[in-house]
Structure formats: structure tokens, C-alpha cells
Length: 179
Image 1 (spheres, rainbow, N blue to C red):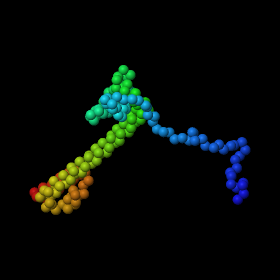
Image 2 (image 1 turned 180 degrees about the vertical axis):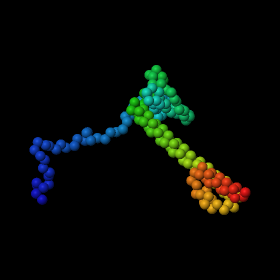
Image 3 (image 1 turned 135 degrees about the horizontal axis):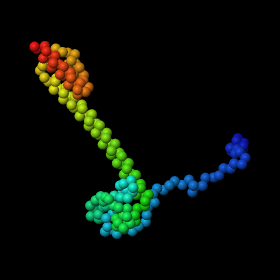
Image 4 (image 1 turned 60 degrees about the vertical axis):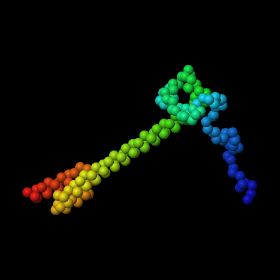
């Protein structure tokens, strides 16, 4: 190979710059404040906003004896002592990150609750369907019925009302034939 084949040619007027390590540096995440805390005071954890206007906060307070409580409705007011402690220990970015996390958790909970309700409703419908089918199939008049098609349709029914209709049809047919 010759020297020309080892290097790419650059058009006239264009130059290639070597990468600057300062420009390509990855973000280091949230900045952590330096602060001093009295060990006798409760530890503030996970402060986050609880409304869209960002005027109220909530946080978890862990007391030195290990007891934890959730503090709610903390006004965003510099005169409020707990808000002052939160601002001394956490940056606004940390509070907003916690708020975003709380919104994601709440959205996931809501979605899971809706899915659980749909599943529960589906199971309830199936239980009701089974109950009405078995109630009719346990009746002696339906067991001994000559209406094979209606009995088959009763077993095949996929909704409560369909099963109820076929069950009633069998009873009516049997009543008519017994007269």
C-alpha cells in the first residue's frame, strides 16, 4: 500500500478537528448539594411536588428512632420550616426528578388498576355465565329434555343472556310437550 491509500482525502477548504474530551463528556447526573444536618432531626427523603402548579410538596420524614411518616401539603413558602429544610438539602432539579418519578409511578398504578378491573369484570361475567348454565343443566327437566339442539346451544352460549334465553327456551318447550 502506498501513502495515498492509507488516508482519506478531504475536500479543499475543509479540515478535520480532533475530538475535544471536554465536549464529549457525558453528563454526571444530578448535582448533590453540600450541607450539614443535625443528627437529631428527621431525615428528609424523596421530596416531590403534589400539584401541577408546584405550590405544594410532599416528602418522607424518617426520625432518628426509625419511625417514618409522610408529610403532605407542605407549602412552597420560604417561611415554612420544612420547606426551608427541603430547599437546603435538595436542588430544584432533584425535586422535579422526584416529581416526574412519582407521576410515572402513579400512571403505572392507574394503568394496573384499570387492567385489574377489566380482568375482574371479565372473570365476573364468566362466573355469572357458568352459574346460569350450571343452574339450568342441573334441573331434571333440562337433563331429561329431548331438545338436543337447544341443550347444545345452552352449553355453547358465550353470554349470560344467551344462556338464559336457551335455558328458558328448553323449559318452555318441555312445558308445551308435557301438556
